Image (tube, rainbow, N blue to C red; front, side, top):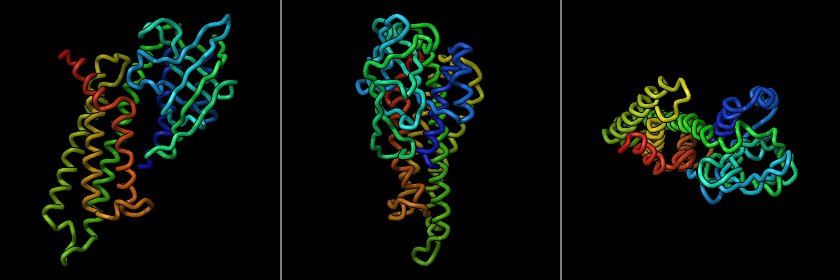
Length: 304
C-alpha cells in the first residue's frame, strides 16, 4: 500500500512502452534491456508547469540544428525523476497542435539538464521532480519514431497509466476496508466490540459495495486491453479511474471515521495505512488526468 514505492515502479511502466512501441531496434537494445533488468531507470516527462492534461499544447521546444535537437523548457510532477537515468520526453519539434509533437530520449547527464525535488503531500518515495532543460543538445538519433508524430504514442500510453492508477486506488480502498474491519473486531466500546454497532457495520458494507463495483469495472476493462486501439477503451478506462479514485476517497474517509484518532497518526500501526491512503487520494484523483478531464474524455468517447 506504499503509494510512493508503487509509483516509483510504475514510472518504468509508463516511460518504457513508447520506446517499445515506436523506437527502432537500436534504441530498444540501447534502452529497453537495461531498464527492464533494473540497471537503468527511466521516467516519463510530459507534464509542464503551464499545462498537464492539455498535451497537444505542450511548450517544451526541440529545435533541430544539423545532427542535434536543442531542447528548452520545463517538465514538472515527474515521478521518479530524481533517480532517473533517462527521460522519455514530449517536445515540440513542429507547429502548434498535435502534429508538432515528438518524443525524445534525453539522458540525465546531458549538460543543461537540471532536476529539483518537489515536496509533495503523498508519494514521498517517488521523488516527484521538476526538470529544466536549458539548451540541452540531444542527438537526432534519440528521436523515438517519426518527427512530429509523437502525440499518438503519448495517448496510447495514457491508457496503461490510468488503468494502473485505477487498480492501485482500488487496492488501497481494500486496505482501508481490511484495516477498519480488523480494528473494529478488537476495539471495545460500551462494553462490546465496535463491529457490533450497526452503524459501523453499515459503513463497512458501503465501503465493500463501492470496492466490489470498482473491482468489477476494472476486471471487465482488463479483459479488453489486448491491443493498441486507444479509442476502443479510452473512455471506459477514464471512467474507471474516476470510479476508483472516488472509491478511495470514500473508503479512506469512512475508515478514518471508524478508527478515529488512530487514523490521524503516521507510522507502522493499525491506522497508518489509512492515514497514508487519505494523504494520497489527491495524487490519484489528479495524476494521469484529473477527474474533470476523465469525465470529459468519457463523454467524448460516448459521442455525447
